[in-house]
Image (cartoon, rainbow, N blue to C red; front, top):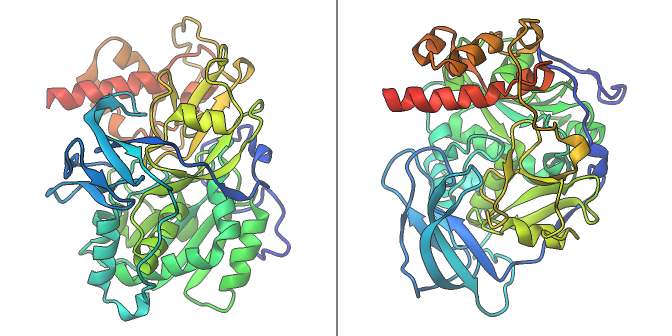
Length: 445
């Protein structure tokens, strides 16, 4: 499809899913800017899938910006780094955005806090694939749009991979940080893609972008038009377009069997934010100490797309955006997007590696918490489920504690996208039922 004649909404798609209000116009034209640096950060030692890090510092230690302060010898893990120069004032359990308490390193800033200054500029073309992977590992990179799986593990595959897919769909409402990154950091993004291609041996990169981001499609199409090994693929605007199985099927036509790893299909999928972070890690030796997030909501005065230090507490972010944390009655603060993000009751929770946004949603945009009713078996959730599951059946089985039976109904294939709960006329908390059941089944095994 020619980017010059593409109209908003057009593009390739998948079966299932749905169109939901976007609210992206609040911030999609707001350029990226740097948020003020807090006096204190809370750096969780668990910001990734896999094994948690062990602290490498003690209370009272002086640390420098970018210094490694936590690591693990386990293969599936990712180190964490100091996001302020200052003093370690506590190592203790604090609330993580996911809700549980995890070990955190609390750093109090000292002196002038500048930006990270690279020692040198590296040429990726003069580095071996193993050197590139080591730089990515040491930087602590993880998937920035979802489960925060360590990037080093993801690209360290022994299976032949011919295709790299960059996920620029950003299908969640309100979020526009990936959109702005593609518009403003296109050259760096392309360099990051080249680095990843060398790491995995891919011959082709596809950049999948929903067609409500026509400026990003046109900019990246223009910059890659002379390259046979890169192609921008416009995607229809539909939720959850950005899930990796749907991207693979939509872009390459390859069927993704349930439970299959993408590498087994010859594909690796990486978020555009992660790909930009790969560029920074390899070229500038920059550890993962900050990221771009969207701060938004209809009543947020200074909404926009901000570069924020990891570990920055939510209340600091809200104040910088012009919101008084003490005047939030009737509003919900959500980390991430409204479909898959998590509402926060503790505003001391910090931004972590996979935090895509901090949203303040007024009561009229939040479904009222009312007692749910029995499933009426209308079938709407089945019709809309992008993974061809029976969400109503999963919710009923979970409600009655029939967890073993849920495995026969493919509970592990549920991606918890929230479409089923969104369309349910009985307002059943289907995703909650599924998450609870997965936890119980995990503990049973």
